[in-house]
Image (cartoon, rainbow, N blue to C red; front, side, top):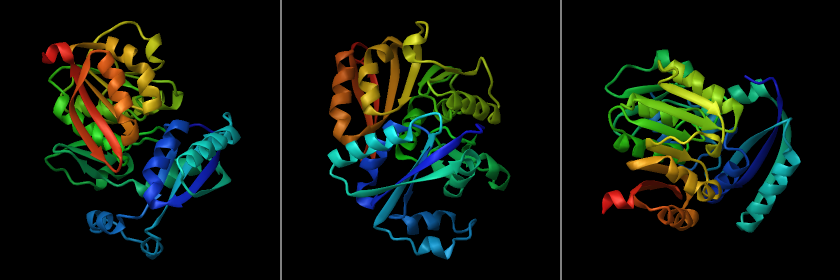
Amino acid sequence: MSSDNYTQITINLAAADLDTAAAIAHMVVPYGFYAEDYANLEEEIAEIANTSLIDEALLAKDRSRAAIHLYISSQENPAEAAAFLRERLDAAGIVYTISFSDCRAEDWENNWKQYFKPMDIGQKLKIVPEWLRDDVSIDKRVHLNIDPGLAFGTGNHATTRLCLELIEKSVTPGCAVLDVGCGSGILGIAALLLGAGNVLGIDIDPMAVRSSSENAELNGYASPVYTSMQSTLSQQPTREFDLVLANIVADVLIPLAPDIKSRLREGGRLILSGIIEQSESEVVAAYETEGLRVVGRRTDKGWVALDFRSASFLA
């Protein structure tokens, strides 16, 4: 992984405001942040208590409070990121405190692992941290092994989980998949494990490109079955896909609507996630303008994932 140092920006706030603040944080860095949320701690402990020793300090955490930790590379501008965060958080009416500290890349890459446990998603998938794969029993679920490093996408976040649930219902045998903003590669790899024929993942972040390729290899996939590259959608040659995935944020999804639609084969499916409920209508309007219609919708904790198909195909 990168040898860069990072500035850790920590936002402390009420747990009730976490989802809105996480959407704002996601606009600053679509990778490299995690949220501390203890509101559902008892339920989460019940899921892992048979395999994990729960620290008393964790049990003593204030359930009404939460924190978001962002990591900004020394090659970027932490002060600019903080100014953006303050502007958006203030506009949202969120009461918060913000603090800064230095963080070595290797510390960030390892510290967050304590929050990442194996998890079942949908009816078929189990997300397994690579460093725990030997400790997880074989079962009837399809195991997706992953080590996201600094790339966004573990399945813990509602946006990723909702997207995976829709993918499970949308993949057809041998279909061609485009993952826009591939992050850790989790979405495309899940599609392959569920029967897709090939996946192209694109991301503007070189860490994501490397992470997604490495995670594909952990699950037995390499080019041309799984290919990732550093690229914007507009830089890609024209090619149509059966299934297009984009787990980004509404501010990015809306202007991408024409480019994304042009990559979707007639009768194909488009799954969008990373959308907060307040922005859903704007996203839907942008894609309806391109001749797409919502055929499926899933929500969790203020987040929305949408499943689109061509209106002409549905007619």
